[in-house]
Length: 230
Image 1: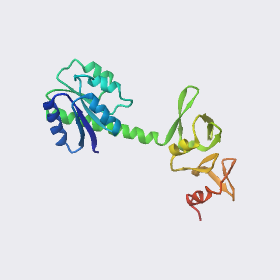
Image 2: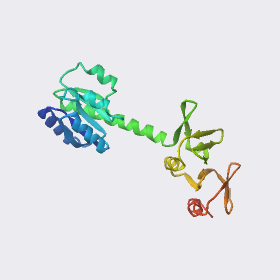
Image 3: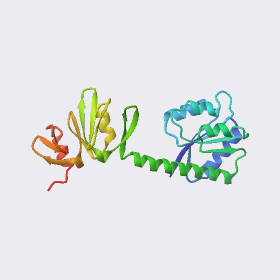
Image 4: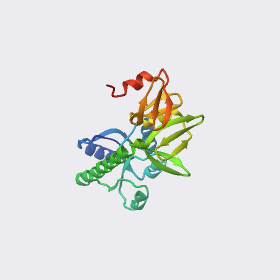
């Protein structure tokens, strides 16, 4: 796993020392070295970053000010000459907190913490990739892909039908089609079906559960190409 990281510190020697440590580590790629938080915000807006090495005390925006401006936090390791920011670091749920000067041993421990956190996040993402979360009565309900029979367009809303219940969601068919992925196919302007739930197919219709769903002429070739036909 190669992690893209940036270094944010107003002290030149601290930047150079940390950059040297990063370049000696086989799993780190230094994308940018920034002397203030404003520069870092520009970099973070332009490309995805896995890890920020972040000084706390800097002129202008502090390290915590930078974190406050980020909609989604990557992995963060705070670097500082003081220990009094430990509570604030905990509040921001940063991955680690290093006191300067940073030793190579402590540096490696911090990187391993980041790698462990990234692996856990990937495992969670893989689980969530098998489902969508649908807002229902003020809460988000996990709906596994395998439970979805089909999706029906109802004007400004779409209806997601499972074997046990249905959910009405304010979204577009195009947006939902992109989220659902491989086992789903739009067979008509008003229907997206789960290919694994097809019971039978006729010339212009197919059946999912007991629902007869029309197949548009434009979508039928792709449908037939996606099936295991004999």
